[in-house]
Length: 119
Image (cartoon, rainbow, N blue to C red):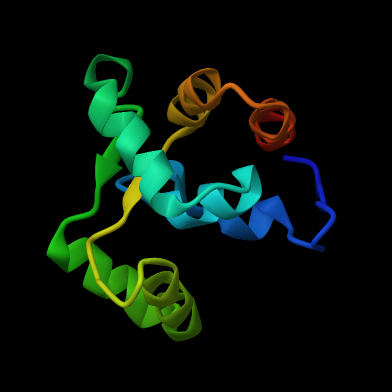
């Protein structure tokens, strides 16, 4: 992946994690990139379940979340803040899930960010 840097100096590469042997991105990170609220991302998935099979997007289990967050303490605090203080296991998206999400969000920002992520 290229070292793409967005206007807020956010490196997309630093938002990609390996979970269950797949490269994925967190719903909250995608929301930041797409300039929408995290709940809008998850709302889109709930409204279009046929477009997000498990191989495109899945929620972390409690155990996976605990292991993940233990490695990124500050990220957890930011994640909770973006959720209004309510902690839920995050949803993650594979490259295919990210591409599908961009088609649902239908904004220029979503399209441009998805292209940058995929490249």
